[in-house]
Structure formats: C-alpha cells, structure tokens
Image (cartoon, rainbow, N blue to C red; front, side, top):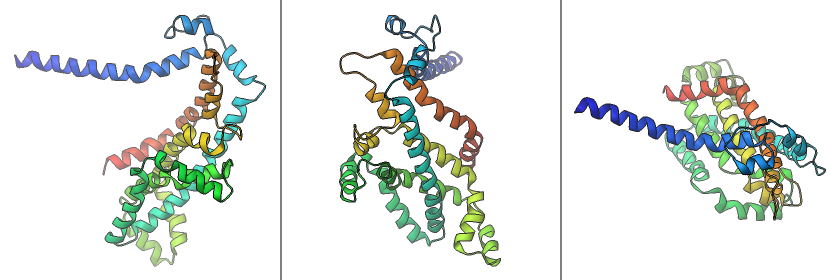
Length: 279
C-alpha cells in the first residue's frame, strides 16, 4: 500500500506544481503572443499563437502622434535610474552605520526601518502627496524620486545590506582602521566592493519595483503633467473601445528594458541570493 501511496502523492504534488506554474505563465504567454497578432486574432482566440506573425502593433505603438511610448520609456528610465543611483549608496552607508553600533542601538534602528516594510504604501501616499505639495514638488519628477527614496524601498535595501554585512569578517574592517582609514573611506573603498552582490540584488529588485510602480506616478505626477510607461499603458486604454493589438504592443515594449537589464545583471543577482542562502 505504501509503495502505491508515495507515487500517487508525488504525482499529486507534480500536478499541483504544474497548475501553479501554468497559472503564472499563461498571462505572460497571452500578453507576449498578443503583441504580434491582429485585433481580430486576439478576440477570436487569445491563447492561439500568432498566425500570421505581424509587427504592426509595435509599429503603431511607436508611431502614435502623442509619443506615449517614447516619452513613457524615457521618463521611466530617468525615474528608475535616479532612484536606484541615489538609494544604493544611501542604503549601504546607513547599513554600514547600523552594523557598527551596539546590539541595542542596532535593534532600535532596524525596528524603525521595519516600519517602512510593515506600513502599506497606500496608507501613507496621501500624506506624502500633501507634503510634496507643501514644498512645491508635487507634479514633478524630483518629487516622485524623493517619494521613492523615502518610502519602503529604503527599508528593504537597508535590511538586505545589513544581512549581507553580517557575513563580512570584522578583521577586514579592523585591518582597514589600523591602516588609518576613516569611516567614509572605509565605506567606499572596502565595504562597497565587498557587498557588490547585495548591491546587484538591491538594484534589480528596486529597479523592477520602481519601473512597475503605477500608483505613485499616477497620483504624484498627475494625469496631465507627464507619465511613466505604466501610466502610459493605462492612458492607452480607451473609455469606450480599446485597440488590444496596440495595447499589447505597448506592454511588450514596456517589458523589454527590464528583461534586458535582468539578463545583463543576473550573474551578480544569483550570486547575491546564493550568498544569503548559504548562511
């Protein structure tokens, strides 16, 4: 009996795993193949492969007179790059400061940053918009970047760096101090090269989150002040009728840059994840 139950249980687990995998892959597959199908083909059979294959949706998306795709991609690249470039050194410096404190101070500081992960971003979004309005940064890209830096993204980066810094041998830091290195030089010339896998992990996660963020750009920038690529996809949906071919073409173009960025940096990303898993 036991020899029959074990294969059946494994087959059940395998079937469950395949169903869960299919549930994740199917929407991505439909979006991908729909980018290269006509409107009629999409409505007739959304899951069918494109036949014939066409680039008309991509061409129409790039030929829009309002430059929605070009403008959205440019704004998303600027906001994402500026946020990551500012957040990475800030989070690593704060994490290095925390790692050098006493256990009680370290616990208090980590509890403070944990609030950024526990409080839902939607709860604090309205106060953030009012604060940006008070200082004159509402409806601006610097205001959007500032809200990204001060939100839960910083808390996530701090926890990743603090966890990785626990694996750094203290002898390295002590040897650098004996050689006369100050805190700033120690952080920049010793810590930053050592935590490069953590930097890759933080950059990829934050880059994807900022790139895919929809609510902050919509409320902070405003519908008429500019848009990122995510709000651009939203604006391309018509109120009474929708060109699904062009919509999926815009969605395909919006995913190209994050996928290329991940493929370029996946080696450091996987190295960072494996380093954390081995501890």
